[in-house]
Image (cartoon, rainbow, N blue to C red; front, side, top):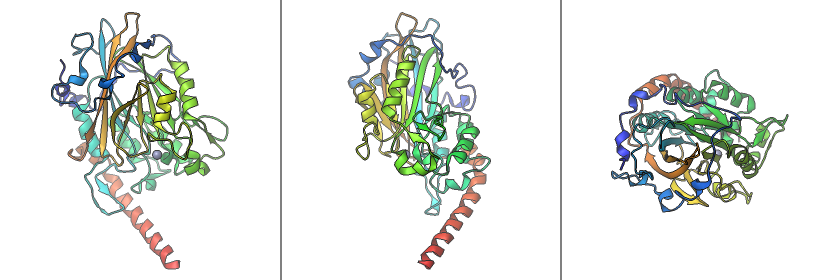
Length: 383
Ligand SMILES: [Zn+2]
């Protein structure tokens, strides 16, 4: 039995290095077969195991063989894949609340970086599920040469960034600037600009230890209610319709399918398909949904066979998902086991490297915040 705690600390040296050396982003590639046995197992009680204890029960290997040391498909019976997920950082990069004007160690990207160094395993994909670039006066950096989120996320080795509606707050030009600054692949499959071109890619495929994992990224179609004026004549389409189209496209070439859905569990405004539960009910081809936006901690629950997780806001939590992919004997893999847990970030010290990297932002945000305060007082005086 592999103990979950075994990997802690040993991967720290790999931080920022070739964590995904074997991974490649492939669009439209064909190859591995996605087999249906992923739906037969891992969807019951074990799928919603949310707390890893020292026994590591949740990571039992179906083949009975240890997965230790497997990082390639060659001869491997099982491959362990780890997804580390954040969302709704809302500008909380350093442990400081700029609106309150005080330190706040309840969570931040700098603290998450320390946790990631500790928890990250070899076959890891680091994902942010949106609402990352605004809040806590981070809008001060909109349209600038380097956004602190892009800077820190690139340094930490984020692989995928799925947009949330707030990432559109400063308009498309500013958003595209941040996307250009990011090393991570940006996903957003259901928002189109005025020329009906997607704002970002609908999916990415990464080969991880020989397992092809497809990541499908969407935002709540209610983005048009909140930020419709920022879309420059663009539109948002149904996340369910777009996700099913991508599943159809990817299911024969991927072994595992992960939905990154910037929406809470429940649909909003009665709009069908604007909640992760709706997507799970309508898209059973997904193995996992990383939800966001609702700011409610979901360590792991299963809807229609799909494991759903969601983080709290402002960097308070980090979700870890562990997927055991097992060879299906036909050249592909299926999901044999999937489990998740939430890590409380409050107990982690800020990462010195990220703190140093973002040190330039502190004075800039404080100056911006003072300006915003002064403007607010002036408007209050005028009223
Ligand atoms: Zn949101």
